[in-house]
Length: 194
Ligand code: ATP
Ligand code: MG
Image (cartoon, rainbow, N blue to C red; front, top):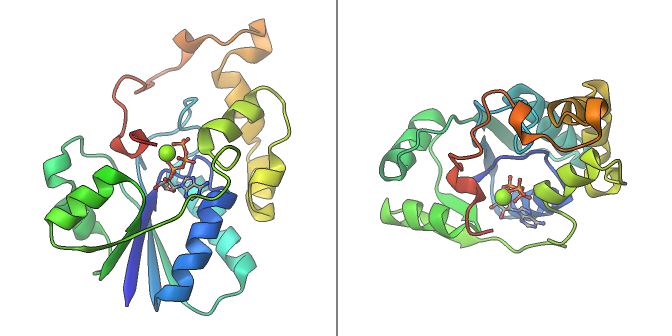
């Protein structure tokens, strides 16, 4: 059985990691879709698809599992009614979708896919929005992500990037206005209902 799990992974954190560990116990192969793959360098989506692939791939290596995991970037198409076809055209065939996102579940079940609901783990802390906030505010964030993810974020100077795009280094104030090409007004659907 091949399973599918999707997220934006900005960044990949311990909550995602717990879900992935659980899924791996239930499938022969896992496909991880990286949503909003085209986004990067803004406060909601600081990391590129390539950086997110690296984070997930290294974190999964830490698990030392033998099962095959495909990590596939998926760009937004801004048309929910066609989204399942878009996803299916980009990833290997799969039998079951693992998700706790109501829209993801709705769209895949309309397309006849089996859905297995995933549990939330320590959602107060294991949350991309909270981790990005801590990075920006210079608070402790490393315990909320797998070790390899914090190593990669340091390697790519990710904290400096987040502070730069927030304008913090110059004026110590959040200045949303300087974000170039931000799509903050066009919320990718992965963000809703969570
Ligand atoms: P953001 O705050 O940026 O939306 P996020 O933590 O919700 O980040 P996503 O990449 O949006 O992360 O989530 C991908 C999938 O993982 C979603 O279905 C989401 O519900 C799930 N997920 C996120 N955090 C957890 C968690 N702590 N435990 C279990 N599942 C989680
Ligand atoms: Mg989310």
